[in-house]
Image (spheres, rainbow, N blue to C red):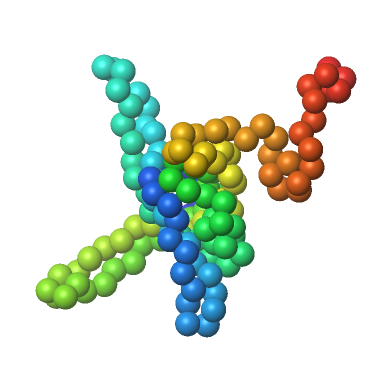
Length: 133
């Protein structure tokens, strides 16, 4: 079984392109923290992600550097020969699903969305006073 789930932040704005057949593809890199070392400093892995179709369009429209995302996908490896004839290997995550956890504000700071349903459906946020528990 080839399945991975990661949560991290975009290191730069997504690159949105279209194939010759018109299918959208977005690529971006997600920084994912590892366990914190004994000296208290976290380490991170920088994982390339590829998203296809309508999800790619949404990523290009709503995500930017610093946005926090959850990715559900699979790991894929591929290779090619560079201009010097050297074999180059690439490992990337092909996303099946991208969840927008938070988005960056215009000044580059991260702002947690107050209500994910509002982001998806345009509904007004629910007032905490209205929740029965």
